[in-house]
Length: 393
Image 1: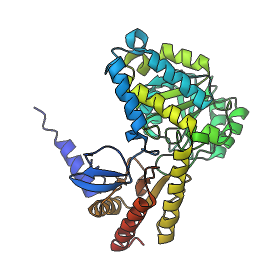
Image 2: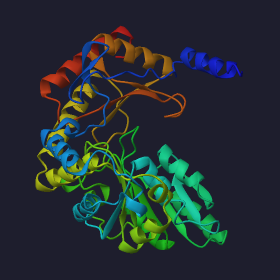
Image 3: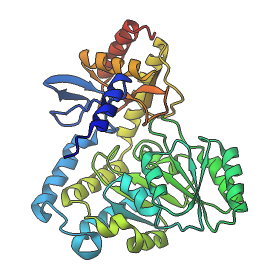
Image 4: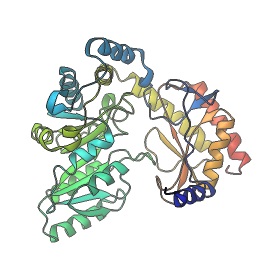
């Protein structure tokens, strides 16, 4: 039997370099505070932006769905797995996003794998921002299209790469970018991307996983934030972050969605969302459609926390959103910082290579509407104490 020594060696090297991911096990529901290892800790790591993961209305919707529809979908969407619940979610989400149509898949990760290979051929070109999410990178790898990587948010370099693709005689050119970059919290320069795309007759695709429920009116996303409805061809999103549930989607023209229902492999070959997930997602979309109170509270919390952290002397990078990267640069320092925070009752994970480039390690703090000002003050005090202990501030 193989002994896997090389895997054990690599794991030890990760630990020595501060790159070993210490996976914490939650012993309570998502919220401002969690129970981990029998200890109550402030939650500054979850993507639960609006606090909806444990929302009573969403829980009631899920429970009622189980009672009426059962616990499982039973099949893939194309055989016996499409329930009227799924179509209701897609219809209401399309209305929320101000697009013609939406197709639901299992997650935001699989949404990129669904759309990118399906709409590209070996004669096409994909132009990808160098800091795009791993799900985009994997979706691109599944495509046979030619690949051109452009410098992060640098639309002049995008123009250069588009010209190269044009000179290479490709058929379609597809520009792909994150809407909100999940590690740094900065926004894609979407208005400039739209201008450049028009010059080259290129398709624009935005993965707005961290923009859905966060930016734009009522959290409609980056396209809404910049007032660019009708200018972006494909929007990919997730319901697992601000919406508090699970599931991914592709939004755009009806023709695109109809095509993906025939060609997208995650849609064709993997089961649909469960009834409970689907009804909870519908409740979440309806809640956001009706009120932007949670979105406003999220941004108030983000502004408060970021101002306090900067005043203490912490480097929070170039964030423009409720994502707060506390830049520590060295992975060993970041890992130790996270450990000490946990000792003080704060759960904030260290992020290092390969999730971020080498030498760019950080504690990524995630704001939530579920946090009170007292919660944030508790976290800020812990950061201050650890920062002084480690001579960071």
